[in-house]
Length: 358
Ligand code: F6P
Image 1 (cartoon, rainbow, N blue to C red):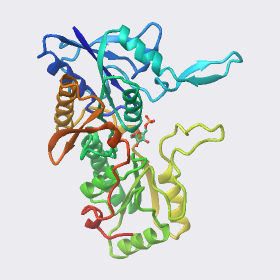
Image 2: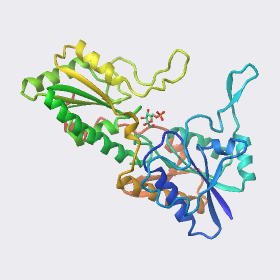
Image 3: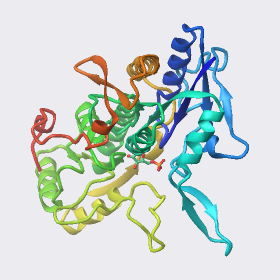
Image 4: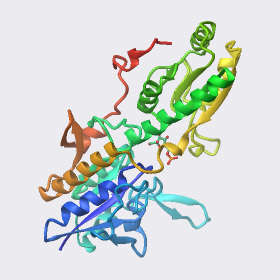
């Protein structure tokens, strides 16, 4: 039988299991194909001995509504940065991509389906250029992948964030407070914008539009002066102040990315106080709650459509392509195009104009 290898890379995302299940179900309609999965992205192939599992209909039964990924994921290691211990006990990384492609041949892998965000798609493209038969499936709760209108996981994250706004509003109103809620979105503010509009937040701060604490305080004052006894601010983790730097996830002194997600909301609270906010402020960082748990129906359906399409790209030998949805139609685009940019919230987005600009 011909083998297709499935990998899930980068941060997990509700709907990953639904993609895996759809690939297996579609492949099972073809007599001469079987599906296998590499544990923790490509690391399962690179490890000695390999960690490869058979993904048959039994293995994927009933996983469509389970969060996470049954084959695990990681953003560490991988074919181009495999960790190697040096003689002096310190670590370095090595390019093992050629070795991995050889190993895939030995394992009888005809093609690879790589489900992942921009980082994983960049790896896929490099492997494709080296001759690997690979197709991509876009994945991120942030919805910022270029060349696709939506990624699965986004609607689930928005639902969780919107329900959180609903909850914070009642406690904010009881105490006459300003509540700041921080959501994910390192480069783009889609989750912040959609949950703000869905939950009726008063101020929404996204990475695409630098914020000015003085203007926000003015807006809050107007609201309290008008008798609205509370306010809700949603801020995306990648937000930055006018003329300032991105605060979340900056490198620490040792040069590593700060593993602590979030923090911009606390900084914003300080800045608002310094800019004259007289109200009580409280901060909530939603963090990984936005990525956990069961996918909403929209994400299950989109993930299933993506999985079926990905296997069909393999069947048709349309390698180097990434599955995509455009104008409600499932299609595909060159991976090269998908990694050429991010999909940012446009300043002209009708959602940006639903409220007053600060
Ligand atoms: O890429 C999606 C994302 O949700 C980002 O918004 C966030 O910065 C990141 O994942 C956090 O992922 P992890 O904690 O797994 O590194």
